Every structure is written in structure tokens, then in C-alpha cells.
Amino acid sequence: MAVQSINDITLTPSEVRDILDADNDEIIELCKQVSIIPRRNARGLTYFSYNDVKHLQMAKQRQNRLVRFNPNDVAAQLVSTLSQMEEKISNNVMTSIDKKLEERLKDIEGLAAELINCQTENERLKNKIIELNKENVHLKMELDKFEKVGFGFYKKYEVKDYSI
Image (cartoon, rainbow, N blue to C red; front, side):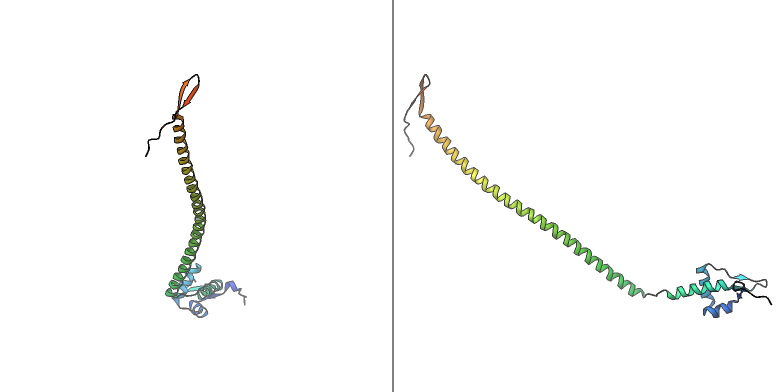
């Protein structure tokens, strides 16, 4: 009697169904996933090798490990995640805007103080101009009191004030 190796062992579809605890449709889907094409013997009967069945078992285990999600739970989780992202983004934007506004307010406060100083200086200069204009008018009136006599001499006349 010849000793068969594990690779030489062949299994019928009914044995594969029992091993995998699956129906024909499920076995066909598993074969598609792992790219296994069932072979046929000389009499035209389908058979699987030991390695083929081993690959099908691993594919079924992977398939069973996949977690099935309820679409409503997934949608609720997505909405929750998006809401959290939106809140974080909004908070970051608001924080950034607040910082920039504070910087601008400091700049504006500095400009306001400088503007007040400029206005004060402007008023002081206006008052100085008014004083200088008064002095200029007074000096012109004093100058009008002098008349050139000749040889660089001037004579001062008293001008009568006719103002009321």
C-alpha cells in the first residue's frame, strides 16, 4: 500500500461542505475570493485538494471575523464624528480670530492714544499761530508808525486810534 502525502489527498464537494459547514453557494463565493477553481477527475466529478480546502477554511475564518455594522449605527457615528470635527474647527477658528482681534485692538488703542496726542499738539500749534498772528498784526501796526525821512533815518508818528 502506497503512502499518500497531504498534498495528494482529494476531497469531494460533500466532504468540503461538511468540513466548512457551508452550502454550495457559500463555497462558490469562497472559491471566488481565494481564486480557487475546483478540478474534475477522469470521470468528470468535482474534487478539491487538501490545500484548496485549507485556503477555503482560512477565507471563511476571515469572513467570520469581519464585523457586521448596522447602517444606522455607522451613520450615527459619522454624524457624531463630523459634529465633533465641526466643533473643534469652529473653536480653533474662533480662538485664532480672538487672538488677532486682541492684537488689532492693542494696535488701535495705541493709534487712538497717538491720535489724541496729535490732536492736542494740533490745538497747541493753532493757539501758537493765533498768538503769532496777533503779534504780527501788532508789529505791522508799529511799523506803520514809522516814516522814512532819508539817509536811513525814520521818524515815528503817533497814529491816532479811531476804533470805538
